[in-house]
Amino acid sequence: MTPSRRELAELTGDLSAAGGVRLVTLGDGAERGIRTLEFRTGSGLAFDVLVDRCMDIGAAEHAGRSFGWRSPTGFRHPGLHENADEDGLSWLRSFSGLIVTAGLDHTLFGGEVPAGTYRYPPKQSVRHGLHGRAGNLPARLTGYGERWDGERCVLWAEGEVRQATVFGENLRLVRRIEADLGGDEIRLVDTVTNAGFEPTPHMFLYHINLGWPLLDEGARFEADIRETLWQSDSVAEQKADHLTFPGPVPGFVEQVYEHALTPAEDGLHRVAVVNDRLGMKVSVEWRAEEFPCFFEWLNLRSGNYAVGLEPSTHHVSGDAAARQDGSMIWLGPEESRTYRTTFRVETA
Image (cartoon, rainbow, N blue to C red; front, side):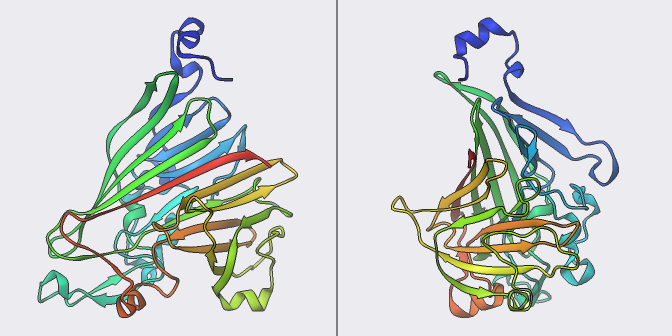
């Protein structure tokens, strides 16, 4: 049980003995120069917020056991990123961590789409790369720290990410991350606003990536799946189980699914990965009306072993299809969308 505010004051002269938020800067290799907020709740939950990587969450662990995926890329500095490189697939060179944000105006695979709404004759179209630009944009850190609310101490951070160009989109993401001292959950609140004056497309997706040791042979995926709407061709070719996971497989080709989920009575979608051997469960919940679509990404390849849980504003068919079928979100001037997501580490 977490001591009261008075008890903590009596026991220690510094709250950091129990937990807190600390700003550091990574200093070596491809990660050099990235400002990072280290959250420690004191319950065993610890995670890093990468300020210069869209305030995404990189490393994440509980009681010394990692659950945020770590890829070979590390947490690469955004200054090394080239958005249009490798035919739009250069995003994969910065793909690591518990959360990688996709958006703000494009998600899923790249392609060329009309840009007529921006009314700039030399710019008739826009070419997007995989999952858009947001994940490699630095944030302006507006605040962080510990705040007492009665006997409850909230660890928090807030920042602003701007995706903007002249004669194009001007989108602002305000991100707030919270965790309670002594708690086992992470709360994420994102608000995306069109800060410009032209109607602007908006697509948004969280690539939530879970890795070893939470992900291991025999770990389970839990979700109230009503129907699988789509799956990649690799599913029929490989037939790897997407509900009870096997161990790493050399040369595995990613298997991707779009599942239609049944929301709970409170209007929330809930999914989880459970490792019974570790007695560990990591769950994610979000409002069904905010993220109506969901993908499961199964990447069992040796050396890249991960499973991805992906709440999304749009179906797997992507940008051009959303424009054609009328499902694209168009934000008018000063129009906003808010997204609320909770992560929990629980006993299996």
